[in-house]
Every structure is written in structure tokens, then in C-alpha cells.
Amino acid sequence: QKIRAIARSGLRVERFRFAVGNGSTTTYTLPQAFRPGSLIVWVDGVQTTPASEDEDAPSVTFDAAPDIDAVLTASWTAA
Image (cartoon, rainbow, N blue to C red; front, side, top):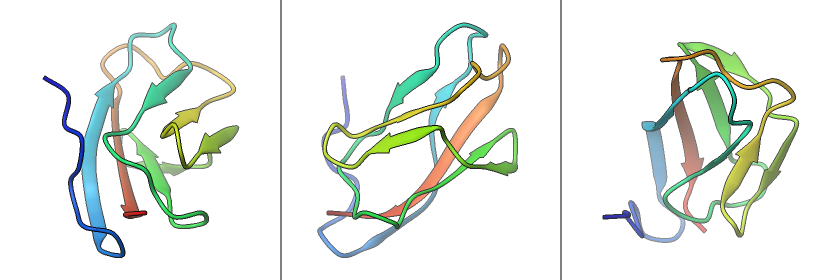
């Protein structure tokens, strides 16, 4: 079952684990839309800048797929 909302609009979500890398996927979906400029992403605890992000989809895309079993976490302000 997909989580549709974590926080009310304007509230901050901190260090939410949203995916685990599989070594081949480069685009991952987050559980809710976020405000532009508010997203911070970590891959295995290392802050990472995605190649692109889509606030409305909501998703992030990496240039290279995160490693197998890499933990993807993010913080954002809910849209």
C-alpha cells in the first residue's frame, strides 16, 4: 500500500526512508509532493544531489543507479 501523505502542506519531513537501491533503477518516487527547493536526499547517509527532481510527480532521478541495498532517505517541505 502506497503512502499518499506524510505531512500537511508546509510541514517538514525529516530523513524519511523512501527506497532501497537495486543497482539499476535511477528514478525513485517519493510518498508526497514537495515544495521546490526544499528536497535534500541522502544515499547511504551521504548527502547527494539528484540529476533531477520533480516536485509534482513526486520523484528524483540520479545520473547513476544507487548501489544494491543503498538506503535512500530524504527531507522535504510538504507541498
